[in-house]
Figure 1 (cartoon, rainbow, N blue to C red):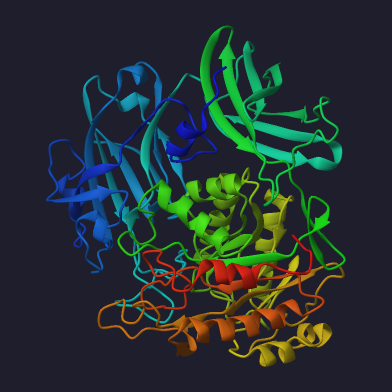
Figure 2 (cartoon, one colour):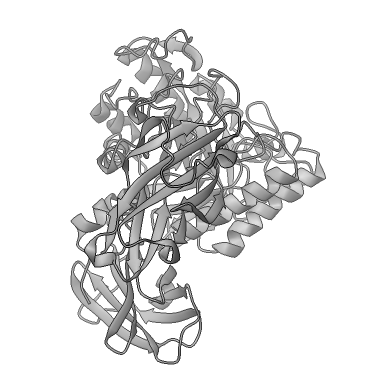
Length: 598
């Protein structure tokens, strides 16, 4: 069984679920707006019907890199492009994969509808084999993305212009599109659950079809290129589990655990075969690590960890939510580490999978946060539930992700303090996360008005350290009442005995440094409190606030707002183009925790 080398993996749109044989469909596509919804009736999906515009996929039409670059509202979009299968894919089953399409779409191949999908942040794949032609093929998408506030939006504003800390929406294809080839039975998913206390890793493989009697699964486990285990098993069921013994008897400390200091990764290749015939082969990886909480501490690998997180919204000036390329994602992780943070709270966005890959590789903790919807109703509850499940399924194997955040600051559940239905919904999302993934922590409603949670995660944007110290002087008092301006817990709820405590948003210091002022034309810039116009003024405020948090004996970490400026919001440590506004080395010196915690 071959090994997928790191360079090959880095180029793949989804490095933790990669096949060796794939072909990108990114690049120039035909494109059209369909404001009057005439496309279906007029047969725009049929071969030979040309669309009048051109767009660079995977960049949304609102972005500069798309080649269209307009913020006008267009609810219905059409995409088209031709492709020819490479020689190595012919005669095989072919999957058409989309990293993410916001929000709902229908997919046509050679004029025939081959599938549909709803959900703007989740990947999906369609088996297009029955509709493929021997020569040139034409794929077509009809996408609907309205201003509906019941769908997960995150920071995408639902009206014209910009508002507060909400930004230009992103419609249509915004993550890579590609083809993959496989045989008659393929691997749909691989879920790996480490158990460091018992030296094992449980591997669950989901096939996309029922197996025949003579079907086998082969597993090859490698560490730093060295073969650790090779196991084969007949497959009796579509979903099949085995447990791998992870001990290496050649070493005293035989488990190579994953942590920010030592981001050790095991590579796993899984192959489906019948006799000597390989039907499918998928390359993934995982880290051996354990996340827990006890006696008010967050534990990583059974040891307390103090988290120094940065709020990261993942926007770029020319490409919006879509990264310019894979290197841009790596660069953001490197910059986060350079500032002395050991983690990031990816805010209101399910990020491109390559970001979490670099967090895994370079050793950055990550909180995975669900983009909010803003209208409490049945549609909202169903859409958020599905999006949360999709998020967990896609990113289950990333060791860097240690916490899920299903709700933020009561967005979409504004009456949660005393409204039982909204409280039930929060509890349901908490339990959904725990049911699908019992290996991670959950911050139930990050910011305030918590129901069920593993971490009491509160936000406070005061601009003076003495105020922050006073707000959090007494843990029992702040949890029974409030820290800033909303109650810490919803009515009828209180923290659990072992719950950890963190201040998961603070700072947000607006800086008019290095050209930050006026980055959005005709838009007043925005940030918390009065703006600072020098590095010295920034550090004076930042050090006071951060030292006040670190002086709290019960607080187990913090999350500073934020990594970059985003459009009108100028409270980033970096300009939108990633130019530092303050010296990263000086910031790191203040940021690294002196108390001995990791």
